[in-house]
Image (cartoon, rainbow, N blue to C red):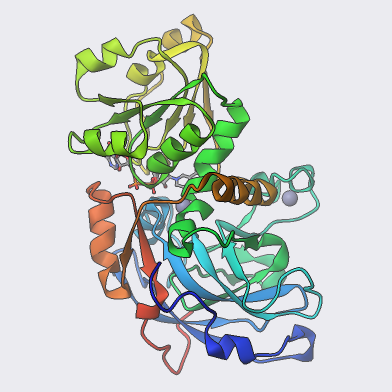
Amino acid sequence: MTPGHSSSPPLAKSLPPVDGREGHEQRLASGYGARSSNSGLVPLTVARRSPKEDDVEIAIEYCGLCHSDVHATRGEWSAPKYPLIPGHEIVGRVSRVGSAVDDLSVGQLVGVGCMVDSCRECERCLDGFEQYCETGVVSTYGAADPRNEGAITQGGYSSSVVVDRRYVLRVPTNLDPAAVAPLLCAGITTYSPLRHFGVEEGDVVGVVGLGGLGHMAVKLAKAMGAEVKVFTTSEVKIAAAKELGADDVVLSKDAASMAAAEGSIDVIIDTVAAPHDLDPYFRTLRLEGALFQLGLPSEPMPPVNPWTLSRRRIAYSGSYIGGIAETQEMLDFCAEHGVVSDIEIVSAAQLNDAYDRMVAGDVKYRFVLDTKSLPAPAAKADA
Ligand code: NAP
Ligand code: ZN
Ligand code: ZN
């Protein structure tokens, strides 16, 4: 753990509970984000709302860097509204609460993942699948927030954030908070399909791509009792994958090794961030195996060969993060099994370099921003 982050900031501790109905002022927070698709990440100042009655203000300590942040800030998926402060792997301490918040208290260690609201009324929301909300989930950054005058949400590369209590997670205190941050996206995104498939002892799980999501898939599948086979394009990661707990590692560029893995796997968690041919991976699945594609490349994928799927009744599925209750379950599972992310802490000034390194696959396995390195906010908000 990084020194200085073991207790809440003194300022946060001294603040009384606030009821937003009384019309308290917004607060300026520091941040780092993109002004355009090619600006890189630059210092930005963001106005955070005063906590309304159900809101929790969080003094952010750490925020993980997800490959989705790269796709989003560089406009690789769609043209976002700039300026855009990314970050959806947030860990920090409660600094203020609204008057109706009685289950979270000032100083408590909490987390926020990929969503900060949803309709709360549709069947999916009521069933705990807020990420699949019928009217659209409100993402932690870059989304219009209907309950807050349609303001565009701004993420966790920032000194603070204000979030409705229903979307705030309790962070176990027996784990390193910096290494917990990536669980809020990389952890839950891989935990959810593993659970959905019902992975248990004796199953063989394949993990394609050993980055942020991939290394969490390895750790979580091992903790669930599965045998794990990693597929990587990087020769240098073969030994590293074994260190993480993988039972077997296949260099996916090597056709002979791929052929040897044929028909050996129950479920594949594919985390590759770029287009790639899935056919060689489908071939490694057993009868009624499944491949969950979690990576969301900006370019189209090569076509799927229906023959490969049909011959073994293989299921090809997507999966999107996880619901709030499932995210809490995942955090508690990690606390019980001592699972955290392998991280490299970066300062705000290193964020652009970290993005380039992530795109080049040069990270073991998640960069995490230490928000102590953020500059002070400017006198006027950019976002
Ligand atoms: P990451 O840390 O950059 O890892 C991606 C890994 O994919 C790389 O380390 C690399 O592993 C492999 N890879 C192989 N060829 C690649 C190429 N040409 N370009 C990039 N990577 C390549 O990324 P991440 O944060 O784990 O995210 C992975 C993907 O999942 C992204 O597309 C992200 O947007 C998406 N995502 C989806 C969800 C969801 O809910 N579905 C949630 C979060 C993220 P090897 O070196 O081992 O081959
Ligand atoms: Zn993410
Ligand atoms: Zn809904």
